[in-house]
Structures are given as C-alpha cells and as structure tokens.
Image (cartoon, rainbow, N blue to C red):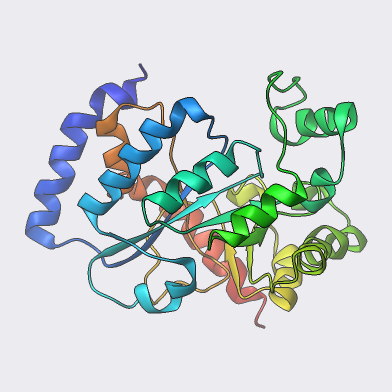
Length: 275
C-alpha cells in the first residue's frame, strides 16, 4: 500500500469537511480505465456504485448538457482498446451505463506477434504484454457500439504526439478518426491523446485535433465545468485495485490541487490554437 493510499481516509475526510463549508464544484468528471479483465467486474460494479453515490452517471452524448448542471456528473471512458473492454461494456450495459471506448485502429488491424510487439511498445514500456492480453477485434468493437456505447479515437498507433514530426501528426490524429468512421459507419467526435499527460500534447498537435474532432480528453485531473474548453477536457484515471477510500478520493476530486499547473498549461495551449 502506498503512502497516498494510507493517507486517503484522513485526506477524504478533510476534503469533505472543506466542501461542506465552501461547497463542491459543479461539472462533469470523466473517469479513465484501461484493461478490465473479467476478475475486475466486481470492482467495476463497485466503482459504478460509488459514482452514483457521489453524483450521477450520464451518457457521453449528454456531455454538453451535464457539464452545465449543478452537482457532479460522471462519464466513464476506457483507453487503448483491450479485448477485456468488451466484457466491461457488456456488464455496464446491464447496469444501465454507457461509456466511451477509445481505440487505436492501426493496432487493431495487426494480428498475432505483430500486435503483441506493437502493444509492448505502445502500452507496456517495451515489456511483453501478459499472455492473455490482446486488443479488441473489429467485430468486438462493433458489438460495443451496438450496446449503445460511444467509440472515440486514441491515435492510429498510440504514439506520443510530442515525438512526431508535423508531417506525421495528421496521419496519427486525423487518420485514426477517419479509419474508425469508415470501418464502423459512425461519426467519431471524441479524441483522447495517448498517455494523457501535459508532456504528451503540443499546440501543433492540438491544432490538428481541432480540425477533426468535437472533443479532446486529456489525462490531466480536474472537473469539466462550463469554463473548460472542449479541447482541454480533464480526465480522472482510476485503478480498480486501489483501496476504496483512495478511489473515492479520486472520484470526488481530492487530487485536483496537484494538477493545477498542468490544467493552466493545457488551457493556455488550447487558447494559443485560436490565435
């Protein structure tokens, strides 16, 4: 157990006392999950329960409305397109929850050892992925879509955008949305840039994202109120194996203060693309 996990109960109590005096911020929080094997389904269901205790869960298509409402609303999202996300999508459907699933189409197109090598580089820091780990197939992505979930783009290959030349950005960013749109026959309005941290996005990349998508979600923590630009959306990564008090702390915005400078940098970057 990490120090943050140990401090979470007291930290959460202090946060709630502060909110009781000053009031809680209103807006939408976008939850970020990744690989969700079947063994994690009880933890996923418990996460849904915690979200409903802390606020309301909404469909991604309602995003523009919910961020203007009082209180906290949550959207669930899944990055990278792991095959285990199909099980999560099916389970969420039974719970009456619709989510965003961000896919890398060029990685989906790979098979066998070629896909495993690409996954190692894209998601596991060069280490081999677990033996039972693979990506969704196109038929499985179609099934997720048929359940009422929303498909978004996560780059063609999950490349870190700040490492790409200007000539490569269009293929990685726009190509991902166009590939998904062509394959699935549906408009792709959401983009989540790979890795999600402030060091993985640039003004040049953001300018390209603006030409193709309606929304861009980062991994920078914070709440999305009406003052947050649609291309600087915050995201809250959560681990289902973390202690419940720590999960609640994340869900209620207890880590927001630590990401203030990253949010300011992201907001300034987005504004620069309008000049």
